[in-house]
Image (cartoon, rainbow, N blue to C red; front, top):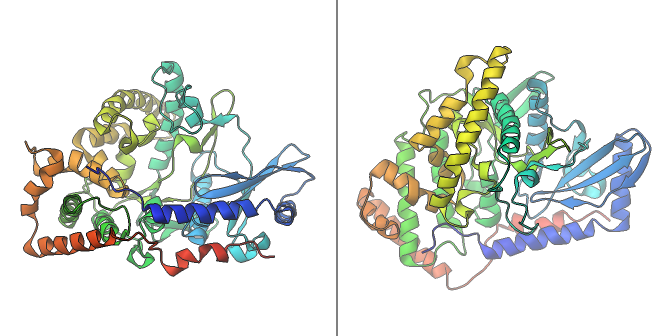
Length: 478
C-alpha cells in the first residue's frame, strides 16, 4: 500500500535537468567574471578570491573573499527548483529586515538585492549579503556520526545530553523570539517604510512551490490573497490537497482503491476545515505569528564553540496561524516523520523523549527571559507546545502543511482523532469512512478514479508551458 503521495517522477526529472544544466553553465569563465565584477561593485574592499558556487535545494550561492577579512555572498534561485523566484526573493528580503529590526536573531546583513533584469547577465533575482563566518551547521553537529553525506540526517541517538541541551536551548531562544512577533493577517511581509512591515502578500510556502514543481499543479489553483482568519486559511490548504490529487499527472496513485483512499482522506479533511474543527485557537482572527517553513538545523550556522552565529534561508517565511508556532518543532530528530526508517510510530516514540528535553530547556530559557523582562508570563511557548503535542494539534498542522505526507498522517493520526478508533486495518479504513461522504462526493470520487487510472496508461510531463520554458528564459545572457 502506497502510504503517501509520491512525487511526479517525470516532473522531478525535468526539474533536475533544468537545474543541473543551469548550474553547469555558471562555471563558464565569462559568467564567473560577470558575477565577480558585480559583487565587487556593490561591496567595498579589495577582492581576493571568488569561491566555487554552492548549490542548495532552491538556490546557488557565490562567496567572494575580501582583503579586509570579510566576505560577501550572492545568491540566485535555481530555475527548475524555484517556481516563484522573484516573489520568493522579495519576501525573503522583507522578512530578514523585519527579523533584524525586531529580534536579536543573527540573520545575514543585506548589501543589495534586485530582480532578474538587474542581475549580472540576467541570471535571476538575487540577494547580495555579508557572509556569516561559521565552522559548521547545527544539523552536522546533531547528526549521527556514522552517516555519510549522501544519507538523510538523523539525530545521533548517543549524543551527549549536555551538548543536546545547549544546542536545543539556543534554538528555543530563537523560537521564543519569533513567537513574540504578531501580525493581523496571514501572509508574506512587505516593508512599508524603515520601521513598518505588513502582511500584504499571499503566504508563499514551500508546499506551494513543490505542488507546482513536483505535483504539476497549475498556478491558477494556488491562493492569491492574504487571509484574515485561521479557519479560511485551513480551508484553502484543504482545497490544495484536493487539487493536488486531481492534478498530479504521474505517480499519484497505484490502484483504484488507493485513489479512493486518498480521495476520502482529502474530502474528510476538507469537511473538517469547513466546519472550523482544524484550528485550535479561540481567536480565529489571530494575532498571527511569524513562521518559517524551512527553519531547520541545516540552516543554523554555528562556530567552533557550538554557538549559533547565523540563521539563513528565510525565503518561505510568512505570518501564519498561531497553531504552527505552538506545534513542537518537527526537526528535533532532524528527520521528518514520513521518512523515518521504521515508520511514523517509531518516529513518534523517539520524538517524545527528545521533546521532553527540548521543553525542559525551553522552560529554563523562558524563566530567564521573564526574569530579565524580555518575556511576559503569558507569552510562554512551552505550555501551548506541550498541549499541541498531547491533544494532536501537532499532526493537524503538519498534515495541513505537508501535501506529499498528507495521506500517511491523516490515516494514522487524524482519522482516529476526529472519527474515532476502528478495528478495521488502516489500509481499508476508507471503506468504513466513505459513508461520511455525500452522494455527490462519491460520484466525484469515481470520476477522479477513472481519470487517474487513465493517466497511468501513459507517462508525460504535465507542467504548464511557463514551467517547461523556464530553462530557456533563465539562461545567462550572452
